[in-house]
Image (cartoon, rainbow, N blue to C red):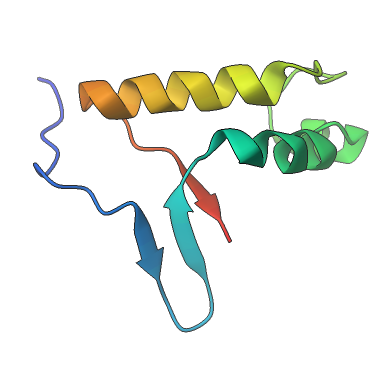
Length: 78
């Protein structure tokens, strides 16, 4: 059975110590900088190593497409 998500998903959620927001294309550089490190790939089994330069852009595009379709909601920790 497919998951049921609320009709309206906030694009930013702010807490006292941490906030999250919808992924943006501008996040690609920061994502790439963090996940290209070998130590990250060791603990994140879904990440290839070496991480491709266009990997973050592809990931963000996929997450934005899934968001539009209402199938998944990708957030960035800010």
